[in-house]
Length: 159
Ligand code: ADP
Image (cartoon, rainbow, N blue to C red; front, side, top):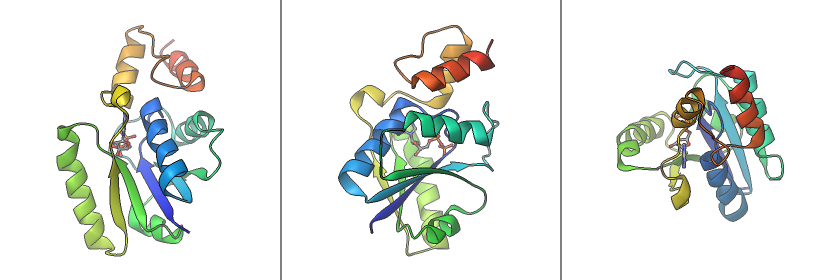
């Protein structure tokens, strides 16, 4: 079995995340675990449970995936799940430095797990969770960028 973990904060899950998962799960891996990080360095708008629930709802029709929360070292969690690959997205050049640093460190921590990067479809290249939150907070329409469930959840937060 060719298993990948796709870790992130997912605050909240966007169509860009979905695009990546969809392509990874249908074309490349037998199973993709979407791993929602609890101990993020970021202050999150949504709680861990909310972020997990919204990711699940945004991915309901994809079969060979599972959404789970995690806390602790990603490489240890990946090993537990028997995943050999850490999947990440690279949107723009500015993503590179951080991703390069992370993948180098993860390799150091566990040399048996490889990081693989996918680039998003063109229409999602500019999309980020933080931008979606900013637009929604200012009263803009985010329907194009997130699932209906996520859109409603954000609206409730900013009401
Ligand atoms: P993190 O806090 O770990 O960066 P994010 O939820 O922001 O978590 O992102 C998780 C992963 O998804 C990262 O690898 C990020 O580059 C990728 N990603 C985020 N948005 C997009 C997008 N629009 N297209 C492709 N990849 C994306």
